[in-house]
Amino acid sequence: MSTGLLGKRSCQPSFGVNPKDKPFEMVDLQNCESRKKMNRTCNFCGNKNFKENQVQYIYRHNGQFLVVNSVPCEECEFCGERYFRAEVLKKIEKEFNAIYSSGKKVKREVKVPVEEFLEI
Ligand SMILES: [Zn+2]
Image 1 (cartoon, rainbow, N blue to C red):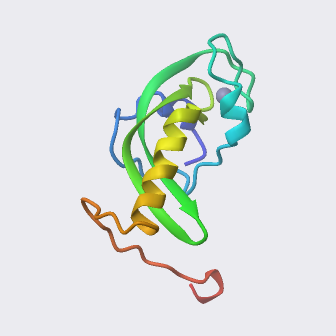
Image 2 (cartoon, rainbow, N blue to C red):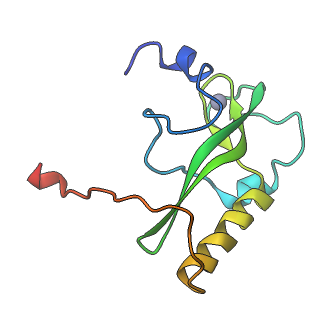
């Protein structure tokens, strides 16, 4: 896990589940707004090279989750940090609300195991 991570990041499949995914994407919405333009720099490592990718996005709000596959993003080629466009995130948020507030039917549901750290 600790070695070779940076190199492997760039060889990820273009979509689907990546076992190395962090459980939640730490995305700053405000940051995304200002990152629409090209020639930006990665917030985390300062790298300027990004590649287009499609990834699984997990939206979490008030203890409820929505998993969306094949979400377009730009991925830092060095550290693998992902940047999503504001309109992409808004679309996911809208879908989340449609499902949880308006009772929209979803294509598929998954069961997720939950554990308390002290009990494992
Ligand atoms: Zn980076």
